[in-house]
Image 1 (cartoon, protein in one colour):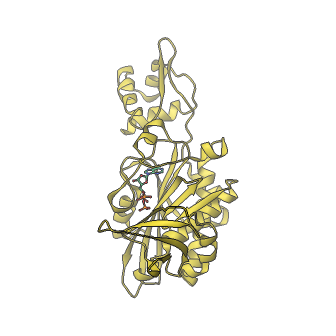
Image 2: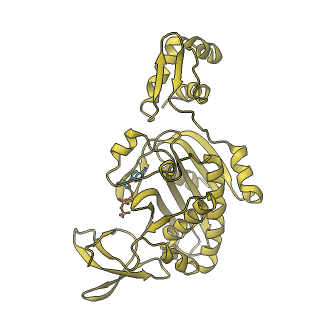
Image 3: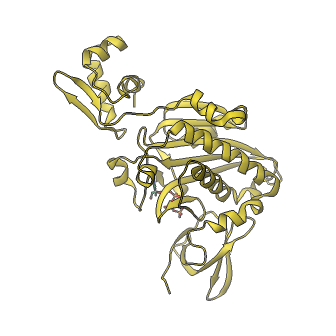
Length: 327
Ligand code: ATP
């Protein structure tokens, strides 16, 4: 989406009617240019009304990311983060990985109003719509080597769970290794990309996408049951407050992880695992599958499964977990 489209949308964000003339005057451009710029709103999942004689109006007001509000939600922790708010990114993880390679400081955060090519694991896509999600990435540095970061996506799940709880969102569950669920529908995804030495230090770009209010367009693109905070709580949480709260909890959890590894968070994670003590099916990269009952996770974040052939351990990476047959 073009910068001009964002400029027009910022004026329309109040959800009130604005005439083409008024918009053109405010931005010092022609009415035809306004019309052209707003053609892009559709792509971002917005519903825009154009009524003759009244002008343009968004179906719903839009909340923008705001540095001051995020810092105020973070309070004393604000100085741990180097926050960059951008209108549009292909993928905040890709962008932050590039910046990390150029020396971005640990604690760097990129949050995008709109992510157009969000990524999941193994080349899968993450879909979101303007104003209807939080999509952000955080760069964190560890003294541990990359091998010891295997439980990181699980640790991040604990941070998100704590943050949502403190925002009044209950009933959340975790799904190994990287999803946040509500009643078996996916609310948020985590994508971790690590760099560094086997013996350390290492760094991780932690990407998070969380649904606030999915557009019909986005819902159609998601190939599995998904939900958003609006459907769960019936009110749209303030995104800046939520982002500040999530970053605060991430900092706490990542500190625990840096000192104790995933072991320090394991009990809390297991308590919230949607498949704990349940039968599951494991999909392996070569299209093979395994079945068994989840008995827990170990200190590296690997899934422990009781199968017919005995206890098995599956580490995060190339495998996926699905509900199994109930007995
Ligand atoms: P796995 O169990 O292997 O992690 P997954 O389907 O959860 O499988 P991820 O890579 O974690 O895969 O996430 C990407 C998937 O999430 C997409 O393929 C899509 O099915 C789903 N998805 C994409 N966007 C959203 C969204 N906004 N909300 C919920 N789910 C989404």
